[in-house]
Image 1 (cartoon, one colour):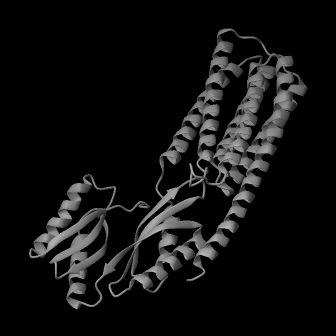
Image 2: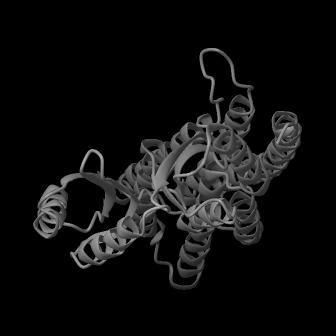
Image 3: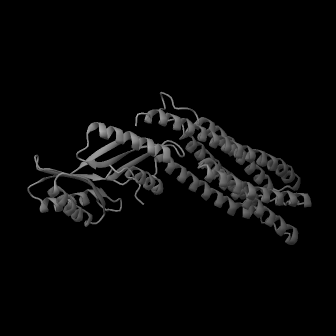
Length: 388
């Protein structure tokens, strides 16, 4: 694999091109959102003031907040696309999570503000004066917001942008606000009953709840969520596709922004491998994983497994049955018997479902030690970070 480094650098350039294309499309989507929201805000403000409708005015304020959200998305995307430097060697991709968090806070603030204004309207009601033009503007606003919400959220999911997804959800909520405003207007025109303030209270609660959910989801991403099981499965499949690799375990993926991963993994190889064979194999695996999944494996650990000793192979299969028979044990790997030092070493993967992972680990050690009392048992407790 003499040209592995050069090939990896070439693929890195191609990856950067994809990132730039993604950023351009996110920014383009955000600009469309800004134009649409400013357009709606201007018309709704004029109509709201003319009609003396607090609901329409608050709806216009929501449009301004949506435009601000789109601006934040653009700024966040631009900052996140900065190249890695000495201070931040893994890049600035996580800035996108911060911009998504700011948008979530804007949604929460809009909900609280709407609740307060609606409550004031209940305490000090002012009768609205709706016109046909006002109703038309509200109808247009509902249609535009529904279409905009779907468009923005669809592109957010396509380009894995939390900021766009949150903006799209916010736009969808705004379409519900506008629709409720229309219903309130029709009820007032037909029955002379003003309900818009009470509807504002209900809608505000829905927005507040949505804002809280968005904040929780974004904070979860910032704290670090488990790797996508499908991605982890695909990477392990790629690694084990090499005939020299007996097994792939302990995959750890570190996320540095949407679709920006680096990680490490352990592989099982025969105990007859030389250093140069391992070096070539590890380079080949690193290259192939990056080529297929755009995940850079910064480290590949090695487990040596017995292949020359039939007795050791029989022990491994016997211990595997013992270990996997214990509840909450997902996997056993990294097995090796050293007759000279009289040791048996292996890793046991304990599920997060175990009420006491340490107790489960001790159960494993005790069970194996009972079966092989003459050996020193070197068992490491392990974790599957992509466990479903």
